[in-house]
Amino acid sequence: MQMKRKVLGKGIAAIIANEPLGKNKLVDLDVDSIHPNPYQPRKAFPKNSLQQLADSMKEDGIIQPVVVFKQDGKYFLVVGERRWRAAQLLRWEKIPALVKEFSDNEVMAKALIENIQREALNAIEIAEGIEALISRSGEGQQETAERLGMNRATLANFLRLLKLPAAIKEAVIQGKLDQGHARALLALKNEGDMLAAAAQIIRKQLSVREAEALVKRTDRAPRKEKVEPDPDIVKMENRLTRSLATKVKLVYAGSGKGRVEVFFDSLDEFERLYAILSREK
Image (tube, rainbow, N blue to C red; front, side, top):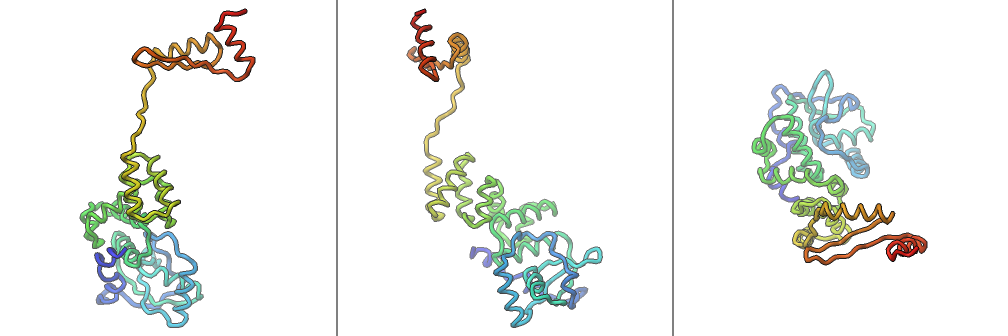
């Protein structure tokens, strides 16, 4: 998503590194004394990626300190969770950390921005992070968009993804569908149509443009409207069913034409019904 880097500008880590320390402190903290960010929007940290980072840190050291805040005597990460996890793999005792003062809302926003800039989040994780930030801060979409450095329309498009069925959101999380596919599916009003179209996109590995064309065809396809049965017809079907002791279906057209369908499960059943209908004994 090239848009993210263009819209959000330079990384939070770079911004923090260039800020005067003020009340903030650059210290070496015990790796074991640091806790994960409670507002971390990222759910998965692939082992292969962490191992590669650990190998790089073992060779070259750590280039940027992690950023933490202190709460109730504990240190929590704001930026640099991958570096902290890699340090754990290396069994380092200490890691350089910049201790800053943040409100909860700032922690959430900075963690979300950092992950978006690193393209470490899928579209659903971004949407859930935005929703959580709005819910906790009480701010509207415009204020939240400004805080994240996003266009409001971009933010709104992310939030719309949360309306998708759970199965489609999971497909986005697993990388089977990307954000463009998911946004195309939102044009469909019927959940069944969404799921069927998503399955076809995945199976045929359709591009976003092809997915949009599929959605248009699906949306234009004629649908059979559900017609409520005539209560008088239902009543007559029930009377015939009781009389013949088998299922009976009455199909009636407005022109006066129709048919009666009598169901049977065996030859003996057919002979019984034939005897009743032909009045043989």
